[in-house]
Amino acid sequence: MLGSPALHGSPLRSPRPALARVLGPTALAAALLGAACSCPQTQVLVDDFEGCTGTCGWTLSTAGAAQLVSTILPGEHGLQIQGGVTATKSIAPATLDTTYSLELVADCPDGIAATLAATVPGAADVTIDIALAIDDSLTSSGNAPDYTGVAYVPLVGDINLPTGVASVVVHQVAFQTSAGGTCTIDLIRLTSTPACASGS
Amino acid sequence: MRQRKLSPARVAVLVAASLAASPRAARAGGVEELIGPDDGKPDDAKSEDTRAADDALAAANKGVKLSFRLGVRFLQTAPFSQVYQNVLSAYGYTSMSAIVEAAADAAVSPASWLDLGVHTGYAFGSAGSAGGSGGLLTLHEVEVGGFAYGILGRKDRRRPGTFGFGAEGGAMLPFLLLRGDVSSARVPYVAPVVLARLSGDARIQTAIQVRYLIANWSNAFAGSAGLPLGGFSISVGANLSL
View 1 (cartoon, rainbow over the protein chains, first blue to last red):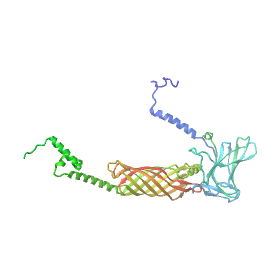
View 2: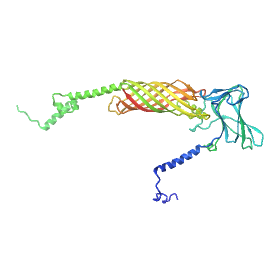
View 3: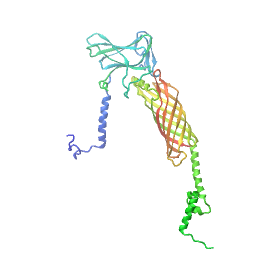
View 4: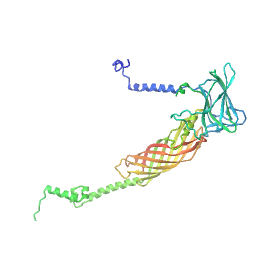
């Protein structure tokens, strides 16, 4: 009955104030937009190497093989690790599934490998290898990002669980640098990828 | 001798003939002036008034001019690389695509069509906070330069304003400030300029200025990318003629 004359222009209906006519759709649009942008992101680990000293809680396979350095700006810091060294950090146990991913910004011309140490409920401990690659997600303008000549690039790797396993409890993150060079890592994030953002 | 009486028609014919024979007198426009003993004196007086006004305008045109403006600059990457935006995004910062700016200029006019002067400016931009523990990344930029503008229509008092175009160049001193740490540089810049000054020949005019700055801080993000500091700039303010 949307087209019924009884609903349109009925003298029994109190006229809607002009402000309400404007604010109603605006509020609805704002609510929808807010809902679309409010995807909760679960953070298991965020480490930007700011406000800390030494190796910022990371344990090295070779003592003294890493140091804090400035990265893209004097006020932006990362952990520079010598080649062939493994840096590990224990974290509070957290349950991860395949919606999680590992992201970092790094200058590792010779490559870097990332692993997670985890337990599977009712089974043996597992080590999950994460294949890191340059994050080529489209920019806000819809273009592929250009990192030509850039030292510090964003890397991302999906969490691929063993076959038949839906989730694991992660308790340690490790990075191993390739022998022969140095690698600087910055802004490490182990977070879930919200379902509402994956389609956007 | 018998004197002939002139009819109105004859007078009209004579006046018309006299006007045709004397265009200058016709411009002065008065029958009395044609037949009076002080022929041309009001014309000279009017010319002197006009000349005095023109002289005053010319003197004002050659005086010192001060300009104060506020505006916004839309950082354009052309002709430089936009890679810096991707680097900032990787860290969780915004691309800092627009910055606000303030300018104070002083100029003199060796000729009525020419303004030569010095430019000082300040610009501020923010890239927001990073994705980690935070920390506001801000850009502060000081400009010192000189300019030469050609001004159109300044001799004509009847115009509602003046327009100009020219070039500006100098040095930018940009600073990137993050968590108390500063990085800085000295960067040359050049900019074509188009300007308008409204409100006729008043001492205080509305000033509108559009520039396209070309400048690049080549190693702003050490080991990563440069920061183009140029782009379209539009500012509005006041121009004072002293």
